[in-house]
Image (cartoon, rainbow, N blue to C red; front, side, top):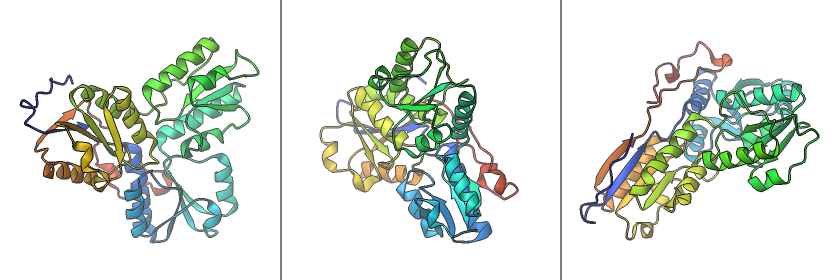
Amino acid sequence: MPLKPFAPNNGLEKKVFLLKPRGFCAGVVRAIDVVEIALNTYGPPIYVRKEIVHNKHVVDDLRSKGAVFVEELEEVPEQARAIFSAHGVSPYVRRQAKERRLQVIDATCPLVTKVHLEAIKFAREGYTIVLIGHKDHDEVIGTLGEAPGNTVLVSTVEDVDRLRVPDPARVAYLTQTTLSLDETRDIVARLKERFPMIQGPPGQDICYATENRQMAVKAVAPFCQLLLVVGSQNSSNSKRLVEVCENLGIRAYLVDDAAAVPTAWLDGVTAVAVTAGASAPENLVQDLVSWLRRHGFTSLEEIELVEEDVRFSLPGELQGTTSRLTTISLA
């Protein structure tokens, strides 16, 4: 949807552009549902390895309902019920769960599972897999674990320039699902220059929600002076929204909630864009909009760039239970 030029009433009107799509993606809705349904069906405690999604408000809410978040499975009592987060896990973690006889419910996002399956396929075919992603991110750790002997991690074009592989004719690339489209495009272009026979995934690994939110930021950036992204500091896709905007020369900040916004950021600003990372709840966005309204930004325009209508089914362990996933539309 093309945006009309912003006209702030000769500088007297202060306006908020509320971007859509924003906030929860289908994978996050599914992951949160998994924890809530498990709690309702089996009762607490339900153990969750790592944060179910990277948002502290979501995690705190689920913790208050009886979810117990742990870093590693050693913290989970044997034979207890444990949930794998939306970011996925390595085969080592799955073996560990089996050894501890845990009752596992897998909340891995299906789009992350797709990348894991691609890694397995390329490894079986003898390719060196170049994984584009950020070191130590939970998703990257899980993907690396599928074929550790075949996979190398790169995060920048410079990493590609330093890359050495056993057979330049047998190279494939995959990507973390929550990367910057622009940055990833540059890295892939350099890989293709260095390895003309390189293979890639059948479809883009970067998820639809990450792409849509970045494209919305790009569309509104020319008409605002400030972008506020609601999301936690460990949320990769939220950080990328900030970077996309900053690369266009517009100030942007990642904030957990309205309380994290200093009023000084609004000095001289007449147009603010607001969006949210894929794991940020909508109530936090609305709280921020209300906060901006109290600080003089009384005009609100919601900008919808593309309609989202994506749903994922529950994992097999919870099939047959009742969930809002059966009716929710992310449009």
